[in-house]
Length: 265
Image 1: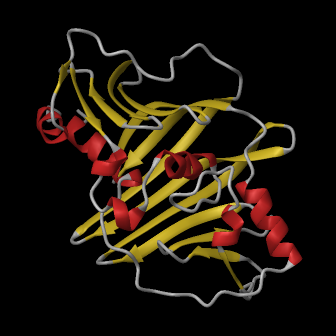
Image 2 (image 1 turned 180 degrees about the vertical axis):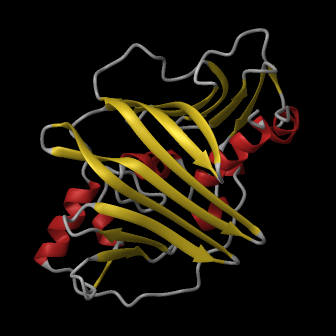
Image 3 (image 1 turned 90 degrees about the horizontal axis):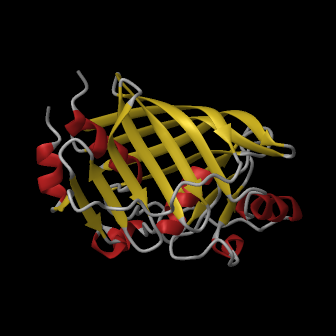
């Protein structure tokens, strides 16, 4: 049986990373017309405002099924199900808060971005979360509608001709592939490493590609977490799901630590 206590911490680890700002610096190269156009392409909003998909996650070898729902500018929801039938846990990223739900025990917890550990070093906010999952470049603290490109540094193409970018203030590094798509986001320092890779691109709509496989690697202290997410049944049609999941009177609000303590079957 899946140990639910392991599901939410690993899902949260993908987004709410712990660590310190990287001390590594990269010399800023001159922004060429090519890199300028590439940044603009990888920053601009996708041609769709909504995406839903079924997902299959492998969490350090444990398989979990669930669903991804995203409505740009409003909500990102990741749910986990038991046997693919009954939802047991949900993480909901909203512009002003993160909501974590334990459906099995009717518990929920609310975490504001300002309360996230190492928030000042990581710059975690809703804009960053949705950029990660929409496969977009980002610069923490800067809305996608602003000139993010001016805050990024281009790195000379490597031996394969691949172009990378860095976000100097927080130390995030972005790698592109041979088709000039965003293929990886990474950050390291303070005893941890994080990398999120994108692959198996498909075309949910004409002229726009989206990765169907997300690979996440996190190292912190003696803990190593590997998460692979396979997306299927991707749809960009407008659905009727709510941006903010309603909390019933049966559900009790508790601290995140208490909620996780109850997720141990």
